[in-house]
Image (cartoon, rainbow, N blue to C red; front, top):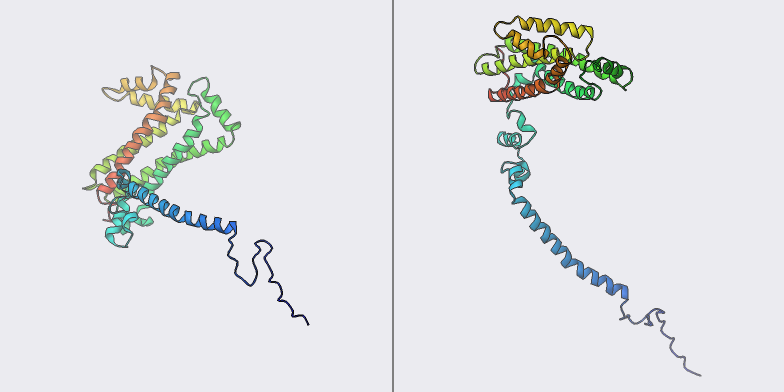
Length: 295
C-alpha cells in the first residue's frame, strides 16, 4: 500500500508563498506607504518649525506690539478684574471711545432720555439720506425744482427718502434743543463742564444753520420767501450785516449764486465743522468724568 503523500501547501497566487509559511515578500504598495510615512515625519516637523518661526517674527514686529499691547487680553489672557476691564477698554480701537467707568445714573434712560445719542443718530441718518438725494439733485435755478419733482415721482423710494430726510432734520433740531434743556436743568453746565456747555451751544447753532440752508434747496416759493426774510434779518445786524448778507446771497438778490452757495454750505462746510465740534464734545464728556450727576 502506497503511503499517502502530504498535501501540497496552498500558495498565494499573487506571491507564490505558502499559507503555512509567513510570506516574506512585501507588496509594492506597502513599501510605498512606509516611504510616504517616513517622509511625512520630517516634513511635518519642518512645517511646524517654520510656522513657529513665522509666529515669532509676527509677534515680535512693531505692528503686533502696537495693536496687541502688553495689557491686551490676546497676549495675557483675561481675568475679570477692574484693571483688566480698563485694559480691554483702552486697548480696543472701538471701545476706547467710551470711558473706562460709567456712573450708574449715566446709563438710566429716565435721567438722560438718550437725547444726545438720539441727536447723533439723527445726524448719521441725515448724512446717509442726504448722500442719496445728492445723486438726483443739481444746484441750479433751472434744474433744482424739476429734479425734486423727478426724485419724488420717477426715482424708486425717492419720495420716502426725501421725507425721511426732512422729518429727521426737524427731529434733530428738536432733540438737540431738548438735550440742551436737560443739561441746563440738571446743572451740567457748571464747572468743570462749562467749556463743553459752550461747545453744545455752538452745536445747536450749527444744527439750526444746517436746517436753514437745506430749506432753500427745493427752490419753491416757500423756500424762496423764507430765505428772503432770513437774509433781510441778517442785513439789519450792526456793523457787518450788509456784508454777510451779500456773501450769503452772492449778490444783492436771490439767484443761482445763492442756491450754489447754500448748497455748498449745506452739504460740505457745515457738516464738516459740525463733525469737528461733535468730536470735541464727546472728548470733553470723557475728560470731565462722564455725564454729570443729579443736583
